[in-house]
Image (cartoon, rainbow, N blue to C red):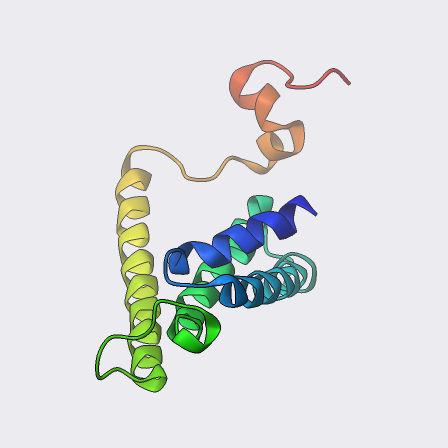
Length: 146
């Protein structure tokens, strides 16, 4: 339930200030459903270790909110309306372009930053450290009483 709440917030964030109540309800519900499906796909079916479902909730929710902003900011949904001369289709193209540019920027610069950091320290712990637990292996103490 908490993840669904965070998914709704992550989805409305790119569009906050542009939507009315109708648009907010649509985006909140669609964000909750899509992010739930993304968590199921990424963590369970693809078996990708997405700590706290960060990408599945924040990434997918943010992308959905950015794209839906084109349609739901229309005055018919209680939004602020589109710029003069803009159509939903033209705004949708702008929103999709923004998502693509952001994804490419993030991938490139995350890779470069991680490559630079890897010059100085290892980015992964050993399998033994992972099995032992990072609290014990890296910090010498247990985070929980077992």
